[in-house]
Image (cartoon, rainbow, N blue to C red):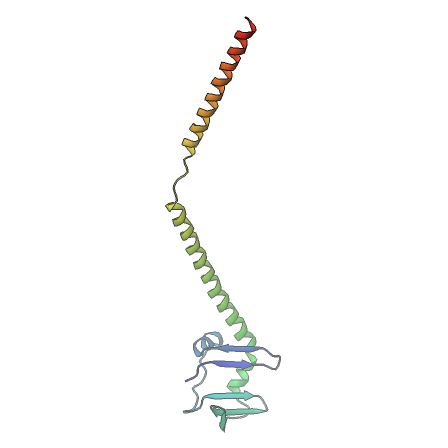
Length: 147
């Protein structure tokens, strides 16, 4: 069974994916490996080896048309993987945002409601009391003036 498919190009780019995602990105599955083979390494014009662990046990055709086509499709593989990864990231970001907003809403709902009306009424009463005290002072000053 193949765990990962790696495509490495001479320009240093690496594409690594599960067989399922490789099939999505490439459009067809990787051919099954011969029984007991754990990896296939293909470098056009250099080697096409079948390995068991680290041991080369056989080789494949040179050139390998399927391998050459994969290498020619590396830009598409990268673009499809990047688009898939971006879609996953955007979905995760949207989920996190929705969960955060729901948590904030729940937190706000559990907090006591501000008493704006009561607070305003209390402040108005203090102002009224101050006005009454000022009137009393004015009346007192007037009465002392006319004595």
